[in-house]
Length: 342
Image 1: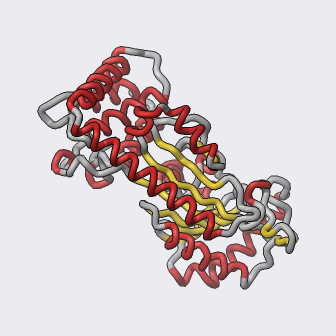
Image 2: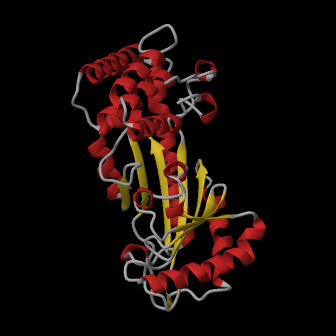
Image 3: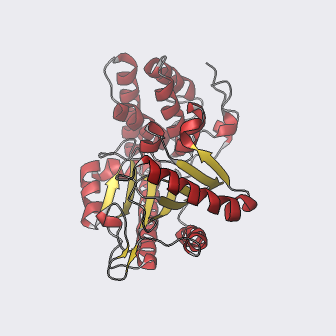
């Protein structure tokens, strides 16, 4: 295996890690059972009705239609790493379909009949909400949704009844995590009525990446949810930047971070017993140290040494290797153009 990082050390290391925002609207079609209760006849009916809509309205706009259980595993993984499908669909794509164009689209027959979504790098939540609204309006003009005058849009999960809106922000916060501790930080988010997961959609933080979303969509407007989460995300980004600046400008704290990274790197290299969290937490703090200017090509734990550690860890596990590379992309350490013969 060879990995080339042509522009790795020519980039400015003070950029914050990527922030990914995702908005989705959960919708169900009136008269068809929810996916968890639908038989194969109902699923086929759902598929045909949505495909007719696709051919009439979305195909002319260059959207793609994909039956997810008929494509190669690698193509399915690419959809997952692009955040177009969740992990559950990656692991079980049967009878699920994707209509997409770039970063937006419709996932069919997942938790609800339709999950209309848009994704962006950053916190321009107004833009992606307008994008999903346009898709939603096209569908609603041609199909009757399951809707109650009292409760709003009816969904398979109680916490999505109402607007059906799910807004999530995924952000890398290693400096704040080290300063305050992960558990305290998670509890602080939950105290603000936010649901907190890791980037894999599971409980617990991995790689100091927090995936937080609105807890309810009933009794609150779409714009209130959007404005609240945008304000919260901007506050987190600002705090993270401030803490990173203090790390760069305080020699004692910089040295402590450097020693922590070196220690964790040695532990991973020497140990045969480590978890996914151990791996990604190490990559997280190494990235933090590099972005703060503590490591350079001639100092500290260089990229070559990190690659050797990872090669020892993933060995013949191609799934773990892909997860590690995806995390490095998320941390803005590498990009697709900088990978070769992986």
